[in-house]
Length: 119
Image (cartoon, rainbow, N blue to C red):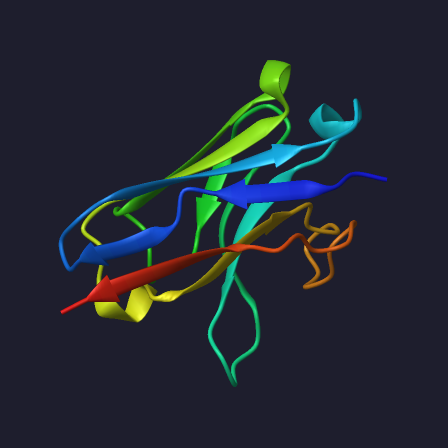
């Protein structure tokens, strides 16, 4: 089993930047693609960025060109650089391993890190 600890969230003005980190326990981290997800109250959790085991990336249209996902397998950590933030990016952000192309994930969810963007 792998556990995740997300950090780096906070309050930022529109147009600002944040860098989120997700530290994973366990030595099998580098066997999985990783994703950053976000959720707002009353809505389903959505996948916003995905990085494969070898570093290939995919993004939701809503964040493309503004967010960059990366990973450091030696540190068992995945990052999300968020630039040009908008109020609609406000959410609780989580990381996890996507189960193939489905909406399911491999591991239990961590606590997440809150991102709040003020207008």
